[in-house]
Length: 575
Image 1: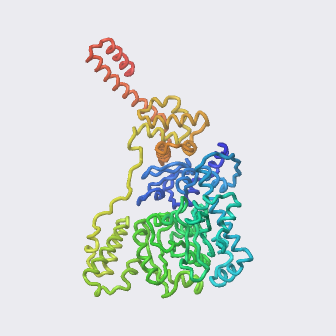
Image 2: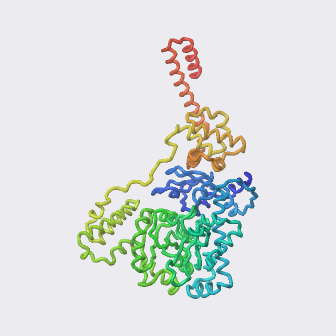
Image 3: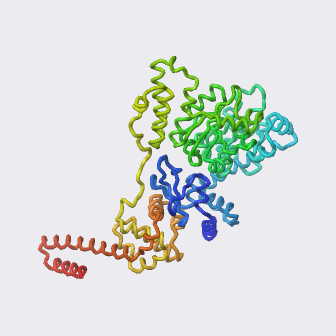
């Protein structure tokens, strides 16, 4: 358990914009920063990050919180892990007592198992016994430098069936821990455990927090049927959600707004070695929508740079739908026959790669370059028209979509109207919701709470005249009570601290939505007094309406005494 004062120190030492900006591309809008939400699929940015209040809120899906909850949601960290992570970044030492949270311990063991495996594989590669693998295979044959070996933390799994198993046991990990992390297998016949990876060059796969979450193992044995053995999907690793190398390439991609997408691990490593840092790998499969959206957080333009053989070109074609759907622009680099990015980088260097990049084809040009339109026939041409029309339909921006269709029509030598017919309607919004609670509540009550978060100097004015009972909405009354309690105990109002470890996600969402309102200076300077008066006026109207209803019921029942008392109350309010 971490002391509350330490948590507060870490929070105050952390800039939420800087942290979230490491994972998604933020753009300054007014006082806040906006981005496409990383938690749901959207085409118009509705994810707001407030630097002043140190909170985030998505007005599309409703998720909100502070810097700790962002890491918990985005990186699947526990609360304690998020605190430790930010403490390391802020260079803050923390003292904590061991807690009894079973789930936290399980996740920590999972992470620890991957780190132990990474250490084991790295040490084995550096051991005298396998000097030939390091120097002959990696450095001489594959041309990988010492710097790249260190950066990508390459390793080696040995010949033993239980080398990692025995090493991990010495670190107090159980066989079951290792199995859950995908590092060992259990024999169905004998019931014993053995290493999943043997006699393979080990390539660790990291998440954006630089943690190892899986491994790829390339065979070092001739005749081995499986060239690569990869980690299975685990609680930490879902293949379709990960891009290899993005943890190393994120900053370069964000700076250039461009990304090279290659197929394999060594393509990434070799391109990085010659100075091309904005490169990631799809691991030989077509892009998933999750991978495309992940890349779209940092990039605007993607260069597909796959092997020149037919399989590589087919992979390029299969990736396009997801990339366009994520709002990315796409170009295709076509290398010499028989070459791949790895071999080109090693043999011809950065100049050759950049020259090919300058010659990259727009996707439409790439798609039709080897086709003889006359030989396609009507049926073949119809299929191609529908294919390109469907891809264009995934482009969210109407102008870009029409330009795509126009270019496709020109390439196919057809009437543009024919190209647009299959997708003439605007594409429907995907997962489009309005999670802005402002529209569901009394605007005066909502505005008053929003002002309290934006202008703490007016807090005392509000508390002098307003109490939770003055709110018509039970939810907004609850928010006011929470703010009042925080102010009385801590002497300040902080939406970030207020949402700390709250279990009620809907209540957290309401608080962050209210606090995330981006107010201009003139709105804030209008002050709380006017809102307090309007709110109290609304309260009086509600009371009068209730009393008039009660008066009507008393008169109808012939209860003259009650009716007279209620009439007096109404007069007192009017005065």
